[in-house]
Length: 260
Ligand code: CO8
Image 1 (cartoon, rainbow, N blue to C red):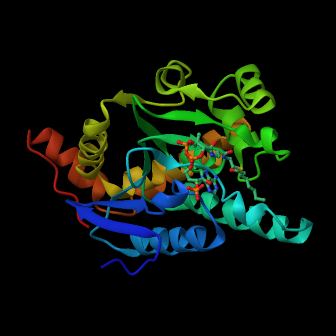
Image 2 (cartoon, helix red, strand yellow):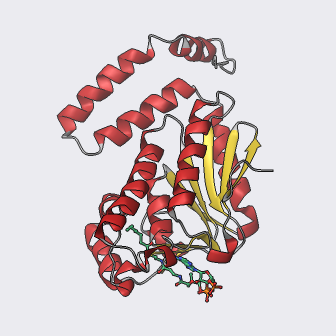
């Protein structure tokens, strides 16, 4: 029994799978779901038995069909500000938490669903997945970071066209654009994510967390600033025993055993 009303949690050999579970609303995000996701992510970050997080949606139709449209029917500007802020807080946490987060997009990822996937470190998708930011069709615009993160992940002109038209793209097109790392058959999606997670889990978690931090923080810095952060973070790795173990293992022709 999950401690969450709208999430299912499963651990598989160091990977924590968080499944957004509101199938009747195609896993749409309301404030309650977002707050639960926030809690689940903090809990995964604090749990030393977890090295990678995978986020997916329940059922075979949707990853997440967007922010909850019903929730937005009668809200005012202050409510909208509060709702958008919750989404931003949670999605920024995905970027700042020290463990990689993989989006396993198993169906539609529309609006807030695409925005959630965009905040993850990388995306694997089933060949049934569709991505889109259809907010303008509803008189809205992306409000969970989509206008900013999409532009930073695919060519600007393409991002603008997707936002202005609200038209969806299929998984293969998202792959061609570099938005998605891998496209699989639906039944193979989770295993593909777990396979990638397994490789990450075999590495130094301190090195992976440090690389994530520099890649996320550095993305919006000038190149000299970002490189300077990289030098400092690289040097800091040597405050742990991981470089010694990794380098010794290489020279001794054995697999490294990194401390937890
Ligand atoms: N919110 C709430 N309920 C939803 C949502 C949603 N985003 N999407 C689907 N549902 C519900 C439907 O209302 C329906 O419920 P019911 O059975 O009670 O009528 C159920 O899920 C199944 O949906 P459909 O019958 O429509 O299923 P179809 O297979 O015919 O269509 C689609 C599937 C194509 C995914 C269709 O449901 C759809 O187009 N959904 C809306 C997609 C969308 O526009 N998403 C963007 C929402 S706006 C947004 O995300 C803004 C983010 C920023 C917010 C900032 C805060 C202020």
